[in-house]
Each structure stands twice: as structure tokens, then as C-alpha cells.
Length: 69
Image 1 (cartoon, rainbow, N blue to C red):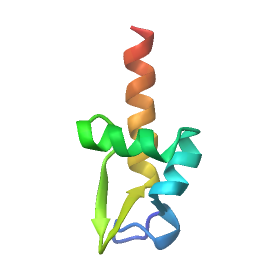
Image 2: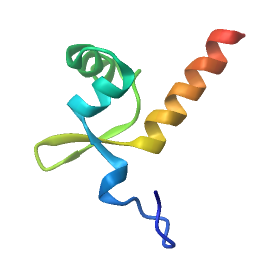
Image 3: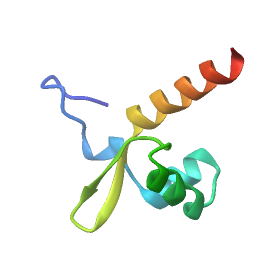
């Protein structure tokens, strides 16, 4: 959920493991996609890779549209 300032709340952020579980894919696959620049947009927060749920959902929607055409 976003606040009125447009910023994401902490509950909208997912770790690498949480994102992999959400996508039902191994963590190693998600790391490989990031290496290739093909996966959902993520960012580093200290030493951790984090993903915004909205970015993951947008990536999924784009993949779904690409696959249906």
C-alpha cells in the first residue's frame, strides 16, 4: 500500500526469498534473472536485495501480455 506521499510502506517491500516464493520460483532463478536484467526491478537496501510488490506485479503483467501476443 502506498501512503499519500506516494512512498511505499515497509509492508510493500519483499526480500529476495519472499519474492521468489511469491513468483513460485527458486531464489537462484530470481538471482539469475536479475543478473541478466530480465527479472522484476529490485534494489539494494544495505546488503539485501529488495523488491516492491507493485514492481513485481507490473513485471508479471508485462510478461503475461507478452506471452499472449
